[in-house]
Amino acid sequence: MSAHTLTVAGVAVDTRHWVGGERVTSAETFTDHSPIDGTVLGEIARGTATEASAAVAAARAAFPGWAATPPAERARILHVVADGVEKRIEDLAIVETHDNGALLRSHRRGVMPRVAHNFRFFADWLLKLGHDDFATRGHTNHVSWDPAGPCVLITPWNAPLMLASWKIAPALAAGDTVILKPAEWSPLTASLLADIAAEAGLPAGVLNIVQGYGAEAGSALVSHPDVRRISFTGSVPTAKTIAAAAAANLVPASFELGGKSPLLVFADADLDLAVDLAVEQYDNAGQVCLAATRILVEETVADEFTRRFTEKASALRQGDPRDEATDIGPNIHPRQLEKIDGFVQRALTAGARAVIGGHRGEGQFYAPTLLTDVAQDSEIVQEEVFGPVLTLQTFADEDEAVRLANDTRFGLAATVATGDKARAERVTAQLVAGTVWVNCFFVRDLQAPFGGSRQSGVGREGGTWSFDFYCDLKNTVTAP
Ligand code: NAD
Image 1 (cartoon, rainbow, N blue to C red):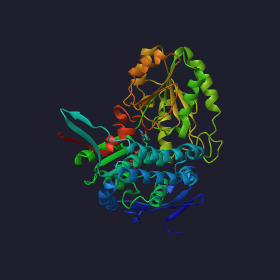
Image 2: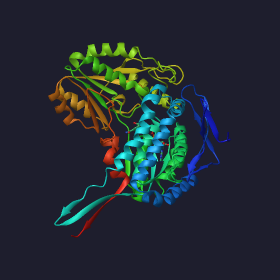
Image 3: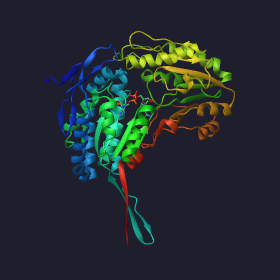
Image 4: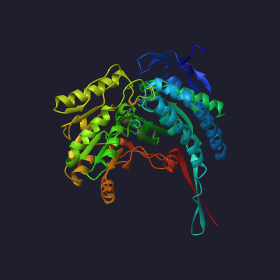
């Protein structure tokens, strides 16, 4: 085993970058800790502008060949990548759980199969594109989806490989080449993906991975003049920095950002279903961009809702994410835990009441928390906490429900629980959100547009929307 390999639960992971089909070191490293117990997983290559430039150069060199590869062949290779992911689901799941603390059972049965599906879906969708010919006064218009060039993809730690594959798969299908910069708190599964892609026969330089900090490797990548697309998932402040870098080079950029999504519970809802939907918001220890963290309940059922919620939430088991019986794992990092607790303590000082939780747990855990008596303009209602912290407010009628739901600078998602179809239609028509779920949550089809309104994002991805972003569309008009 090389000096550049670490092992997690018996799985070997290369700690170096992956550039032009080769492993590349850096002079310096950064330390990767497990959120489960704080243990050091290993030292990871810390990329700088040098490695970022080398990766962009490799992506640029590989671009003409990959762009010229027939779509059917690109799709075939992406299916082989998906096969490779499926063969290594157990390895990917255990490594991801050690690296970001999310539940092993959901990595095994939900997330990693979905990663494979992402590759298959975009491979297949590619082959459906390009049949948009139409006539103008006898002339034919032919729309082609041309590959755009090297793309920089920057991802966060809350669903590392899932979110990376959701960008890598459409970019590669489109004929682009890619440089991925994974989050520094969860760098490992991206490295395994490089191994899988190489085994699948993806040509050298088509997929490159640069590890490191956002302010070093990340900022060097997004400001590189040879990059043709930037796709970012992460926080609003980082997005603003990246948007400025993209603007300097006039590079199209897509942003999937944070949220403060509402769950509207009307008195006519199936209350048990509404409670289930609310408790589900603690998934991934609340580190989900789409989480409906603001629960808005019609006042006539608020007491009963709170009673049933408390009973159900109190039964959640917090603990080791490797244990199949665990419902909530640790939070990602001591710094994130500080941030979460800061939000909660300031809310309590301002007069909020903790129905459950309101404090840290042991180690890197935060007690699932529900806060009431919160003002609409308070920090806890307006700012994304990104931990297992929900607020509960009541409303008198539909108008007030919609007003509270929309009174935020975000617009990522919304969930509506109601037994009245006409009401569901009326309310959803007024909500500002990229995705609205009615009597359900987190049902996501890859052909649907996904993204946020307002400060929750710029652009939509999914199905054809992804190819809109990753391609340079060309219309060719031919005379009769
Ligand atoms: P973050 O913005 O701190 O970091 C995200 C990524 O950006 C990391 O890889 C980081 O290294 C990199 N980065 C930081 N500064 C950079 C710079 N100057 N230039 C280039 N790259 C830079 O976000 P985070 O804390 O890792 O993630 C949590 C946030 O992500 C939350 O706000 C969450 O809501 C959001 N998120 C959104 C979605 C979505 O689809 N809308 C999905 C998951 C997470």
